[in-house]
Image 1 (cartoon, each protein chain N blue to C red):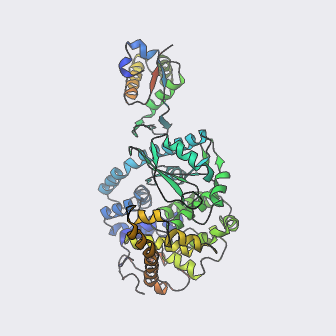
Image 2 (image 1 turned 180 degrees about the horizontal axis):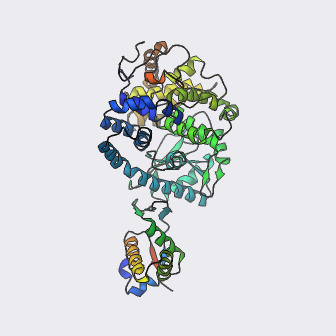
Image 3 (image 1 turned 90 degrees about the vertical axis):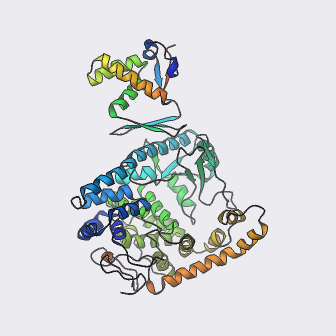
Length: 103
Length: 425
């Protein structure tokens, strides 16, 4: 699901995050490196953002990932959701994740 | 051949590349050199050698109080991108390895960021200009196709009569966004079994295949020899390998390799002998033989160009000369075909000849071999009387772990009392 088709807020929250095949990501102690093999561009995510991406991949929806992040980091859900949305939007824009709409 | 003394920057670079024991044994000399060096020149030299992150790290670790704050800051700026780049390259190398595995091709990363992580704990400590992977000869085509699917194109090259490239295929990314990839089927000219066995005996770590320690060590020596002992990066890696693994593995580490691959015996003997003097890896820990003893072996050692400088044509000639000097019995025809009378495609590439430049091609096919032999004679003249192509600093001719070649070694120079290289002191 491309960024411009996200539509309502609910659309992102009910979508599942997928890292496309042309993206390599690898977690290291200080950061997660995400490399787009098609563009050759790479991006560094700090440990928190890296963990968010991992949880988004493991979860059935972005909304579920938000719940898990909030629990793991012991933070209010509202603030976490804002951070996760921003992260998703940034990663989508760079072609580093794709969103599969809830079927 | 370089004329002039070994500079303080060159000597410091060499000492920083040594084993931990070498660096400890020369601590005072390193401290003295730090007071003499120009740091801009030092960082330029380290960059040229592909040693900037490692050299800076070693310097700050060895003499932390002697490096001025401003210089530290400058070094930090210069080296900061290296770690991040190393992480990216490591991720890329491992992805290619897993792509190949999915395609049914067993592949082993060689050198590069994977080695850097193992030796230095940081994949960015070695500068890399390409990614090297070893695959089986019969799977080369499939491997090329797999990497090509990632937006790479195979570069044209001359092929051996068996249809294989001399050592590896080179693939360049179509948009230049990713590093070139070299798909090796062998590591050194005089072997085919070693690389095959290295691949077959490699260990699946769960994070991709890795070579057995003794194979990895042997491969580094072979790479250094194949490169004609130019530069210090591989020597530094071997010293770091020794520090990391040497004490844990059964010594002498390469006796079984030398026995199992007799065509590589001279290569390993010469390289081990050279490394002891250059970076302090004890030769007896690598091989139990008596060390370089024949004229050819000693000459190959003396041609080592650890500074990595000089005219391109002579440097290239010296690299091929080392090839001849370490060739096994029966290896000379291979050597001749490879360097003295190379195939047409290689002549065209070397001399940038158009396909229709028939007479020029004929001329160079006839002249190339004699031209190379003339360069060998120049090299022999310049290292006559036991001289080295690049002398070692005097600090390595004194003290515990310094070694000189069998016979006289009149080259010596100091950072404080320069002598002209090649002149007996």
